[in-house]
Length: 542
Image 1: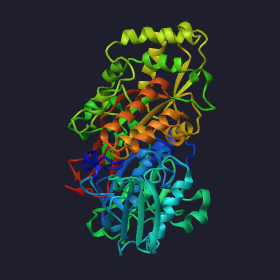
Image 2: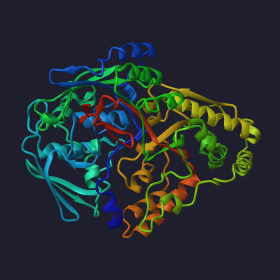
Image 3: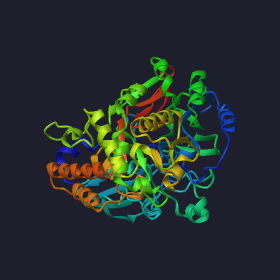
Image 4: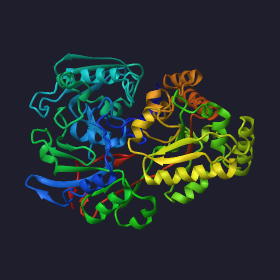
């Protein structure tokens, strides 16, 4: 991808993910537990302001057990990805200012297609063994073999990776990939210890003692459905500059529980917040950040999906009937109207935003006309006025998304006469979605690195998009885009990708969000947060 004008702006891009991850698969260790049990366990969190002999103990909330995972090759949701950033480290890492900086690598050299990395001399695993180049090579291979959400993250841009000695790694890219540092700062590309994978097999990284850590923290305990405790490693090379001695990571998606714990001081951070309480938290710890993500309705087009949704006329009718502006007004969270998969904020050399370069998926100015077209399409599909429309299950993972889903379902009832779709907030949401155990679902994608390829590429494979959609014309256009020799050529191919999705509608965008989170900036500073990614390593007391 020879995009020198764009790459100059994107070289320091921050890799982040999201829920609905990047919003993808959760932990394989998820087990069922009652909400009362989880809430009681979460209440035992150590108070956020408590200092230890070695530094600060902080409590945080970033999501439920279902979104947690410590296997870097398979984790896909923001909670788990962010957790991995604390206990593992790649050739690059997220620095204190949110920039991508060298991590386990002491030096990086690049001649265009060949990148040579020299490891630091003072990096170790938590069992005392030295981190080697082979650990990275095994991690890269293990990622590819996983065939999971991010299995092609590195192989999409690199032809090969080899260890030339214990300290040297050489990666050869398929094109001049200026954002490779961002990819190598992303948890999926972190090193993996082969001996632990071979010893524990499918149980690898499902318990605190079934993996080994090379990051600033190690997991000292993992109480499933309740809490993970991370403790600073004294032998981490930069330990002297880290004030946080312990992170009590509460595992909950219960928004009211998280808010109450923040108000009481038991936690200092949460991105789990009831929408209706956001206004009350202005000037009381509420923060906004650029979203770089989308908020969509996903249709299951796989073998487990209902046949009614495999009719493109039905999907288009459902899409057109959604009153997006009303949903934006209900949320009142500075959202942008979603008329494309890609979000705003990406401009070409002429200063034109990509979302203004492409054609919108629907008429953004004529909702009444859209509704009339939706009725016609549904009638053509054989369900005039909703008659005979089958019962469908629409799944979400928290109360705020349930409220939006219920608003969408109400539009379908009022406009199309469909009253057979039920919204359910479920435990194990990510596992259900990735397993195809749904008809309709919430879908959101937080960008992992700030290049258009990341958002459009989220729909390339079944592992990523969870709607089990494939389209050969789309794949051809996407592959042409990422290898295009000019920005104009690339954008034209991405425009074609958007047009194909607008016609097939495997998902339909509702809005593009601002990210909101709570952070106790009265007593603390140093939180790193970008596009859903949260790093607590650099937090200090005011």
